[in-house]
Amino acid sequence: MEIVSSISRMQELSALARRDGRIIGFVPTMGYLHEGHLSLMRIARKKCDVLVVSIFVNPTQFGAGEDLAQYPRNIERDKKLCREEGVDVIFLPDEREMYPENYSTYVEVSGNITNVLCGYFRPGHFRGVATVVAKLLNIVQPHFAVFGQKDGQQLAVIRRMVRDLNYPVEIVGAPTVREPDGLAMSSRNEYLTPKERKVAPKIYESLMLAEKMIQSGIFDPEIVKDRMRRVIEEAKMFRIQYVEIVDAETLEPVKKIESPVMVAVAAFLGKARLIDNIVVNPR
Ligand code: AMP
Image (cartoon, rainbow, N blue to C red):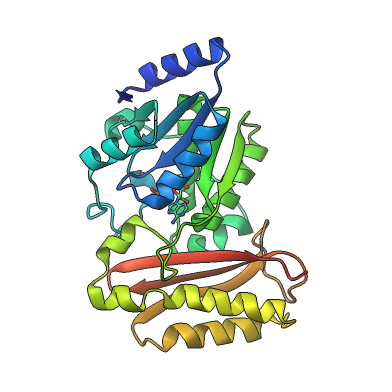
């Protein structure tokens, strides 16, 4: 396993691999790896010759007052986990390498897709995400890249960017990996106190209720969202940011659930901002 911190070296490795006809698979992460990240690596490993994982806590996707400085990091552990998953290259740039002095180019996916859900509560977040992913795709030059459904809006935004900018890369979506009690795995679960951790699965419980309601023929999103909120608020510990039901692909609001929808929740539980979603097909 090679650890590469320079962009030029990464581009060189990828060019060599491509010249030899080798398939490059890519998993971008912010590190502090857990089973969710490892599942993405396993999906990628099966489909590629060269598996590249990037670890970069991207400052441009954090807003002022968010958790950039506190974001958990454990690079030695991450390296060990990557080695165990058969990763070939870890791309581990520092901030200066990615955003040198006078850096001034940003990628903005505009419209509803970035204005709703997390985009509404974290202005500028998806601009940072799109920018760093655009850069990483140019640096790693993968044939495909794997992203988790856990960050459903991010996946939709990346798909849109790749389509709009004609990136020659396949975007692969991967299912959300959960703790046994349903809590979606996340590096930010680290922030939860034991008491908070206990009630955290309420979010997943609300998503399961939504699925059940839709599948039993309740197609009015307002009725479903109302019941979901009540489940989450039972714990009296969450500060809900949103409970939404949107078109699964465009993230446009729906008045009636008649095609696949993304049911999505964001809520603060203590210091942790938790997000989760499921895609439900009413048919
Ligand atoms: P992050 O390090 O949080 O930026 O996540 C890196 C990648 O891992 C993104 O594509 C995430 O969607 C994905 N990911 C994070 N948590 C999970 C999870 N619990 N299940 C599946 N994928 C995940």
